[in-house]
Structure formats: structure tokens, C-alpha cells
Image (cartoon, rainbow, N blue to C red):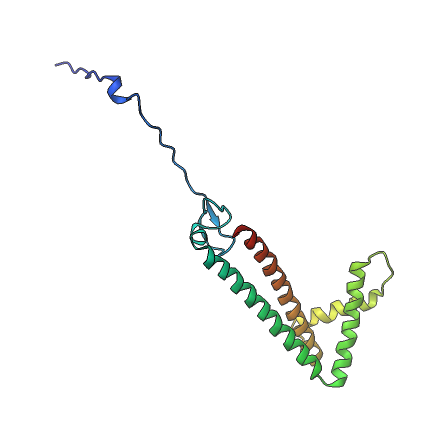
Length: 171
């Protein structure tokens, strides 16, 4: 018994009006707004399809997070100011000396070509190192509050820059 292959008409397999289907895939991204992984919105490729489907909600999220960053900064600033104002005068005098050393350090970064008192800069760095290392003492407590305020200010600045990018995308 011999097997034969059936004859198939090529016109039946490939009709003249065959359509070609192109598959479009959405890239996976980390959304600029909600910072979650997801599929990119087709009209705004930097945000996910969830945020793209709810632009007012995405704008509200950006506003909410920026306001919270501002509140965190206000709380850190208020805690630092209150602690400095309520500090014992001797403690405040030591802390003000640290502030002068820190000011010298800031000037050295802004104007590196000028002459600066490197001893004072080293003292400021040492005081900050001791504060970060949990050295006990009221002056170090004030320095820690200042460092916390400074870190919170950097977080607010980053949140502000992020919100500007989000506003551009969400227009």
C-alpha cells in the first residue's frame, strides 16, 4: 500500500485578500508617577496604563506626595529650630560654633580657590561623624536634628523635581 500526499490548492491556503496581523506589544516599565511596574501607556510611555487611564487620579497622587514631603520638611525644620531655641545657653554656644565651622565648610565648597580654615572644616566633619555615630550629648542631639532636617530637605528637593517631571508627562 502506497501513501500519497493529497493535493492542496494553494489558492485555498493563501487567499488573495489575506490580511496581515501585526502584534503590538506594550513595553513593561516602572511608572514615573506611581513607581510600580506595569505596562506603558500607549500615549504617554513614561507612565503605566493604570495612571494613563486615570490622569486626574495620577495628578492627585503627585500632589499628595509632594505635599507630604513639604510637611515632613516643615516638621523636621520646626523640631530643629525648637530644640536650638530651647537649648541651654552653653549648649547653644557650642552648637553655634559648630554652625560657624559648617559655614566655613560650605564656603570652601562654593569658593575652592579661596583660603579657608581647614581646622574648622575638620572640626565640623568630626562633629557630624560623631553625631552620625550616635555619640551622646546635647550638642550632638542638635547636630542630629540638623542632619535630619538637611536630609529631609534633600528628599523634598528630589520630590519637587520628580513632580515637575510628572506634571510634564501628565499634561
